[in-house]
Image (cartoon, rainbow, N blue to C red; front, side, top):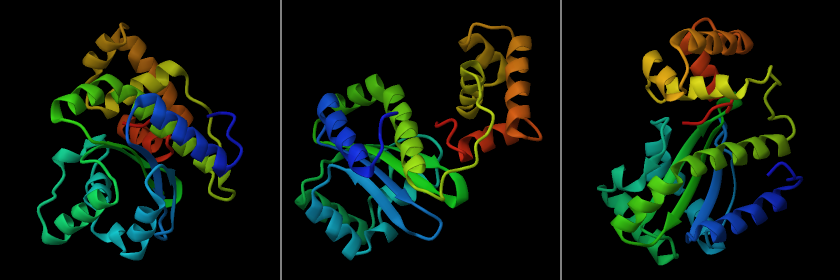
Length: 226
């Protein structure tokens, strides 16, 4: 991913990763604060055109559901009950999309909202095994795709900040996932005092007023993804 220089490179990586993970489709989808969309992925071009022409962005349960969340979302947990949504789903299936999906929402600078999605056709049990096995990989890939996309879009790249250390990133990520300090320290096999040092260092680098502010800033800038 670090060698990506063009959007075409990003598209090629998407196709290679789809094959590596053995899923039907893999997609990175960006929507900025003005509603402008950008993406790369393996959905059929006929579906992409159909999606844009029909304005499906307004009713897509994946977009709507993930916009309200910070955590990765299995599509089965979204609301597919409305008539318009059911017609949307039927249309998607007719264009070759699978019934299983897993999306990682990302919030970036200047109102950016992005999704990284894997889509497949298989049983619920098979999908549960896949998502549990690869959850961490998919979260990291979401971050990598978004970082590359921001780097390739002149004028949209966020200002550079002092980079966080791996331990600082781990500490903030665990807090963002809902761990308390004792649980986070235990997960990292360190003392709460040492954890506090990492958190305070990260807070200072991010220019945050408190720990909650630091987590929010790290997520907004795409430094951590949960």
